[in-house]
Length: 336
Figure 1 (cartoon, rainbow, N blue to C red):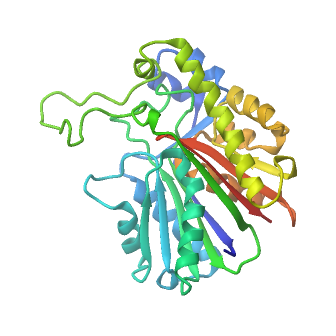
Figure 2: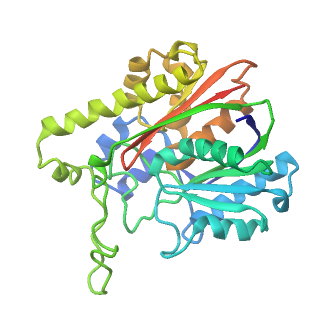
């Protein structure tokens, strides 16, 4: 399926220096500083996930010179809980943009959604020959009532959205392949126990937040060896899913000009780059440390940055790769 990315748009929360913001979230500020992040972006209380998504989408549409009414498809990938339950954020985005002719699809595969959306787009283009233009959006708005954006795990969460307009037959940043590995054994790893049908909210005390960094160990019965097995599996499967995608088009990971990963911490990204055999300067490490982790928006935001900075040349093969709760590991290859 032949399609490429025409334009990009971004919408970010307000920048905050990690050194200044960390005491608001944890007493363990030394651990936070050791991750290497310099700043995060935090949206004001009255700015929701779909507000960020709509702003990024409008910017991408404006750059492409495309009217929302001309879109055939909108795909929204989100990480956290949107503004409301029993509510389709993708359909709401469609209405806010005035894209009333477009099919709207919501992806909730966590931080992998910004990668898997490309495969979904390829499928829709393949099965709907009349689809010509699509909008993909990745958005994250941390729900502070349920997650501590600096204490839950080793990524510092930022609020923001990235968007891109895709067009059938466009030759720039052309989609080449996507691969996904899913492993449902870890589906409960980041589960929030209250609020679903199994244990609805009933008033009374505030609901317990999702697991923090220590609470994750409960899933492994506090067995550090089992936890370390998952840590090793995480990086191994990122390597595997990239290799699978490359094999699909007759390429090798050594052919990659750039690898855009999750906006992870310095140690994790450095180790992963070494495992992949990619120089760390050909990853998104600097962007990650400067901005924080935007969940499903990381890859679109980083692509926007790299293109604007002139980091791509014709013929470059770019891998977008990462993981998300589920667990899912995904890779998409784009060719400049």
